Length: 371
Image (tube, rainbow, N blue to C red; front, side, top):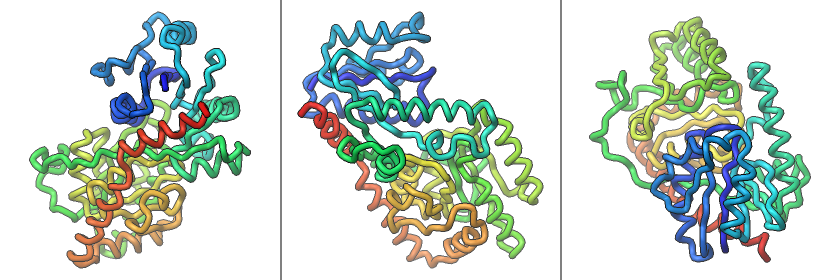
């Protein structure tokens, strides 16, 4: 198979998507079914994959409309299949195209809680994704939840949709790297951890209300939040922080902003519990990272979280801060032996999600359009 991966975007690539490419491209290049690989990216992403000989970036002069440059590159490469992981429509001669759906917020909650401009952008993203799914020869869904949506809500034929979940790096970085700034000397397992970009769909208000409820009952738990707002949701993030102060949590919520992968790992390993509150995920990378680091996790029961955590998390209904508070209380009351076993079970569950498996399943999905 001569495989071309075309990374069409409206601008740059998100951090999670860059990580996906860094993890997957080298493995696809060595898959037995791949005779040759070419990866086309915007110039802003070239640095992330600069060590990959298969990668080409279109020129800065073609950023607004790279289609002509892309087609010239494909004319030279002569692919058997074109993979567009960004859920955008792309036609190249009679070569079959495979799209991937990996962002569910525009599909599930385009407007809810978002500023008007961001909501309208989400509606546009949804229509772009819908068109890509309808016009592509095949679609890769990054979870069973996404597949069920595409088949059940968008009426795609089931045989045209394959499930390929993302992987997670299985190695754990050394403890010597230490905590993020501001958490030096913090007592291990004495605090809650939440992570993810500060957007309405993240449901962060659940854990704020739960911590407030617990405080009124005498359990004053600190909450550490990693992640930052993007330009479109900065006002929302400011409002959430004001709400936390209004609840009396100003001195107990630590807003870390963006932290490194090493610092994230430290937080997963040393927190008393990790809380996943998101309402709109496709393949939640944060869940995979939490498990590989053995976090004791509490999660909303919103799909696809149970698909990934399985029985290694305790669940609560999204929006139900009272039940979440009870789950947090129970987690901090667990005997040390039970906590250790729960952490071990999470690490074992994470071993099912390897990048090698993702690469092999991606090639199997792509082959379906060649038979």
